[in-house]
Image 1 (tube, one colour):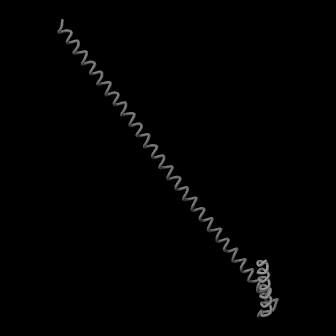
Image 2: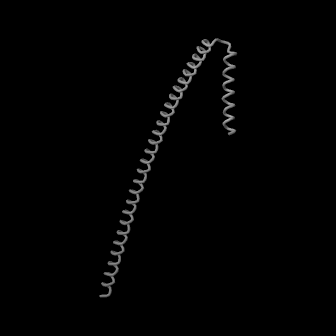
Length: 128
């Protein structure tokens, strides 16, 4: 109940304020209406101008962000390509090192086999 009476007092105060404003207005009603219409038009123009400025700012920031994202994408892409090349080179070097090691082991095994056969054939000849 108290809220309704508070709202009623608000409306009463609003009505008294409007009435007092009309009674003590420095201009006639027609002049006041023209003045209010001009100010409303100025306010609308100001709001339109600010909205256009805001739209242009957002458009420019969007373009800047797109460019930054594109630059980051390209840098990331080139970094990944470079790392891929480095990895491929490392894998190739590993394969070559494996081939060299296998070749060295085969050569050592073949030398050991040749040396073992030569010493066993020499021992056989001495035994006869």
